[in-house]
Amino acid sequence: MNINIIHKIINPILLISFITQALTSLYFLFELKVPYMGVIAKIHAINGIFMILLAIAHVMLNWNWIKINFIRKKNH
Image 1 (cartoon, rainbow, N blue to C red):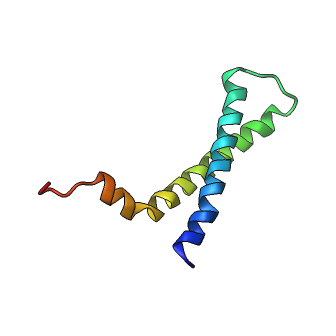
Image 2: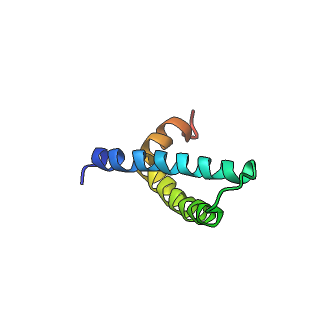
């Protein structure tokens, strides 16, 4: 599969995962009382693991760019 197609799939999913994580974090931060707090806690925990896996995939897909821009050669 073309790497650009993989980027177009993983990046939006990673964004949605990030937004989900941020929103569920707000429930804990502000101690909001909602009827299904247990469900929100499970979503937060499962999505956290999912987000870590997506972030690892994202870094792997962009490793060449990271090396070029952030990991300098010793002779420079």
